[in-house]
Length: 71
Ligand code: SF4
Image 1 (cartoon, helix red, strand yellow):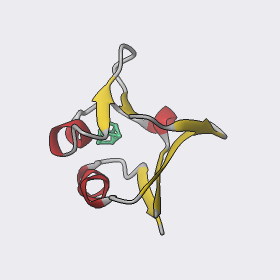
Image 2: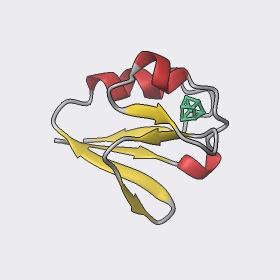
Image 3: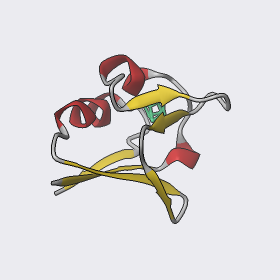
Image 4: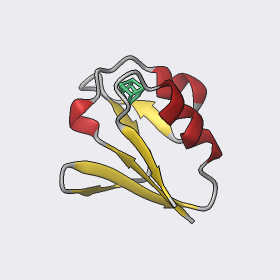
């Protein structure tokens, strides 16, 4: 299992994560991306998943590097 963390308050809404990983990220009405099915923790969004491959791609393309994968 891996934990995906999105520091959502720092998101600049570029949409890159949604382009490469639409199964896990979507754009929300406030023009920031949201990690789907996640829980809020200390201002971040977190999701435990067995398959983080797509999220890793999202982390790579995020220009402000606010998507983190913890093993
Ligand atoms: S790639 Fe990063 S900055 Fe761009 S929408 Fe996704 S989380 Fe926000």
